[in-house]
Amino acid sequence: MSLKGGPASRVEDFLLLCHPSQYSSNNAMANIDYIKLDQFLKQMQVVGTGGQAKLMIQDGEVNVNGEVETRRGRKLVTGDRVEVDGQTWVVDLSQLG
Image (cartoon, rainbow, N blue to C red; front, side, top):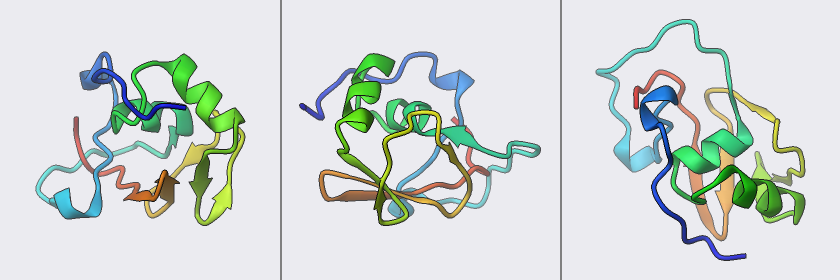
C-alpha cells in the first residue's frame, strides 16, 4: 500500500499529534483523552483518506507500541508510539491542530 496521500481533511477538527522533533509544550488542549488510530494516520498525513487508513491497518502495516494493530478504532493516548514503514510518531494529545 502506498503511503502517499493528500493532506488530512478538516485538520482543525483533529488534534495535532506530532513527531517528537516537532514537539512544543506551548499549546495545551484540555479534556482530550484519546484519538482513534485511523484519525491519527490521517492527521499525520500518512494516508489521505479513512479508507486508505482502514486498509493499511487491516493489512497489518501499522504497529502501536511495538505490536501489530489491526483495529482502526484503537484508542491512542499520550505516549503511545505509532510506527508505519519505519517511521515512528509519539502521540501527544496536548498539541493543537
